[in-house]
Each structure stands twice: as structure tokens, then as C-alpha cells.
Length: 447
Ligand SMILES: *[C@@H]1O[C@H](CO)[C@@H](O)[C@H](O)[C@H]1NC(C)=O
Ligand SMILES: *[C@@H]1O[C@H](CO)[C@@H](O)[C@H](O)[C@H]1NC(C)=O
Ligand SMILES: *[C@@H]1O[C@H](CO)[C@@H](O)[C@H](O)[C@H]1NC(C)=O
Image 1: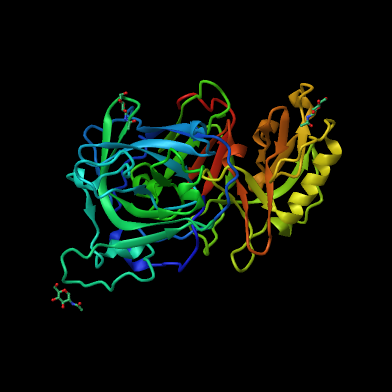
Image 2: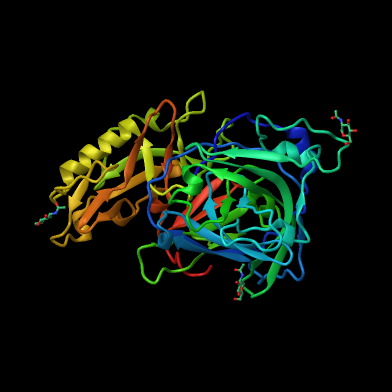
């Protein structure tokens, strides 16, 4: 998912006031398992960012070998194309499953005000059962870091319980709103210890609606873990203590039993291919990369480079988004790629069209993988990303494989490298060095 760009908040002064540079040595890291859900064509969205807030880190005993990690698993059993991260929130800890989303900044969880006798359908996070939950006051500087609902009451500075209301939108029209708050969050580490972070800023979402948040892509999720580039994201808040780096490997969700992979905060693997991360001042949330050219079966396609560029209005470009399943490409590039695929595939087209896909093949005769053309992307800096065909041909029906690419209009949209395309690779987002690293080696192996 990608957050929707509304008013760009550039609170530079505030940023420096709040920036808590507890620049601990980046030799340790945080590691969380990743889970996944079934493919479901989502919509790309855009973003909104804000500034940040201090984070205090409670190290009980952080040593070099103490590598915190969060498990990530597939949401496929719930019928969605998302990857889920499990983490704890509150005191005592309440375990939650959140969608790992590099396309948005805000971390939020679905909240319920019930204290006792909660119905089985009430929201998963219960702030009233936590001793450490604290909503920000609407007058607090932190409250400027989030967008507010249009009709929110004016902040009364002297009133004690004027909570900070947030409203965060995604480009498909999904919206979450509630109280911007702080909590203690905790994670397992590789050493089997529990690491605690105090004053983690997140949204306690009392009102959540829209296709991304209630549809099949959300089933099984208790909220969103915002891993975007902006300062309020999970990775930015925790990253200060872990070198502003995080990495993940999204495992193939069609495998059974589903393998577990990890979201790792801090330094991970070393031997990676790198491409620079680009900055789009109009969308500070996103991790933009430059696509220089596309080849199919080693033949470079004739696509004008301007098709991939970010224009003066901040449109265009290509982002890497773990919260979007399918890959979206600019219309002209998509048409060219589709035409070449249609020409090169040796397999018969499926007799029954699958809605939402332009090219579906009948593989019931037992097509080998070699018979599918090989797509590759040449990225900025010269790195080549050459994913296997299973990353862009999905099983859409019994014996039918479809090309899992979608077009977006060049003047308003942007390309999205979705999580399906990222499967089987480790991706490392390095904010300090402004680069994205990737490798296919040892994806499932704990770094
Ligand atoms: C941490 O590990 C323990 C023991 O393996 C497990 O029971 C617990 O669910 C884990 N917590 C999280 C947040 O992953
Ligand atoms: C702010 O709250 C205080 C205390 O509740 C109240 O006396 C005052 O009138 C309020 N001010 C405004 C502008 O609403
Ligand atoms: C695929 O091809 C087989 C014969 O090779 C045919 O029986 C079947 O109906 C086809 N399925 C689709 C969806 O086109």
C-alpha cells in the first residue's frame, strides 16, 4: 500500500528539536519474522509524511550478538497478498500481526476501547489493558507529525484530555483514523531475549475503512507496520539505534509449509548488488529507484527513458513497495512489454480470460519454467534485477498462469515493484547511504 500525499509537512525545526540522536553503534540489529498472504491485486497508492519524535530505547543487555528480529509470514491463508510481521505492543505485551508496508510511514493498529467483556469481534489492540499506552496531547509537537481529520476540534491547549487525532489515507481510498499515541513495543531477538522500545509513536485506529483495510487484502492483519522513508515510520523510529537500515526476504508464499523469513532492523548481509535510492521531495515516504531499461530474453526493449523518470510535479518514477502485491508499470512500458511477451511465449493462451490480466497462458500441458520469457531490469548504478518468471507469472486458475503486471497512467501514477516481484530476494533499505541492496543468495537463511 502506499499512503496518500496530502499537505506535505516540512517541520524542519521541529524535526531538529525532536530528533533524539541516540546514535548507538549499529553493530546490533532487530530481526522480526515475516508472514505472507495470498495474492490479491491491490492498488498502488501514494504517501504522506511527517516528522519525528524521540524514541528512547531500553536496552536491557544489548550486546553485539543480540540481533533483534521480527518474524514475517504469508497472509495467503487469509486470502491476501500481504506479508505480516508479528510484534508486541503494550504492557503487558499484546501480540499483533501487522502488514509490512514500505509504501507508508504510519504504523497503526486497530484499537478497541473495551476493557472487560470484549466481544470476539472487537479490535485486537486494547489500550485500556496497557499500563504504558499514552495518547499524545493535541498541543504536543509530536501531534504535528501526523495529518489530522478535516473536522477535528480545535486544539485546546489547557484541556487535559485533548487527544491528538490523526487521519491517514491510502491512495485506494482506505482511511484509518484515531489517536496518535505512544506505547512500549517489544520484539524477540536472535539471542532469544526480548528487546523493549519505549515511546514508540503509532496510531491507535478506532475508525478504519476502505478496500485496503477491510477487503481481502487486509484479512488477518491487525494494522500496518509503516516502513517508509519518512521520520515517523517504524524503521526510522527504531533505525536511529540500528544504523537506519533494514532488510527483509519475502519467501515464496506458494510453498508448503510456508517458510518463515525475517524483517531485520540493522545491518544484515554484506554481498549485495546496489542501486541508489532516489529522493522525490513531493513523496518523501517512498523508496524510489531508477529503472534504466527493461530487457526480455536479453533483448533491450525500446522504451524511452523518460517513461521511467520522476517529472517536475513529482509524478512518475518507480518505488519498491512491500505492501503492494502486483507490479505496476507505466502504460507505454507495460504495452511494449506485453507485446513482446505475447510474441515470445510458446504456450497457448488460456481459453477463459481472467479479469484484470491481459496475458494468461494455458499451462495444463505441463509447461516448464524455461518456456517463459525472462524479464530483467537494469537499474540506476548498473545493477541488474533479473527475477525468475515465477515472480511475474502467477497461478490465476487451475492450469492457468497470468502475467502479473498492471499498467498505470504516466501523468499521475508511478511504477511500483510489488512484493510478488521481490520474492526470494533479500532487499536491504539503507537510508543513510541512500541505496537499496538486493541478492538472491541465502534469502531464507538467517543473516
Ligand atoms: C517470542 O518468542 C517466544 C518464544 O519463542 C514466543 O512464544 C513469542 O510469541 C515470541 N514473540 C514475538 C513477538 O514474536
Ligand atoms: C479550553 O478548556 C478550558 C478547560 O476545560 C476551558 O475553560 C476553556 O474555555 C477552553 N477554551 C476554548 C477556547 O475552548
Ligand atoms: C487448456 O488446454 C487443454 C488442452 O490442451 C484444454 O482441454 C483446456 O480446456 C484448456 N484450458 C484453458 C483454460 O484454456
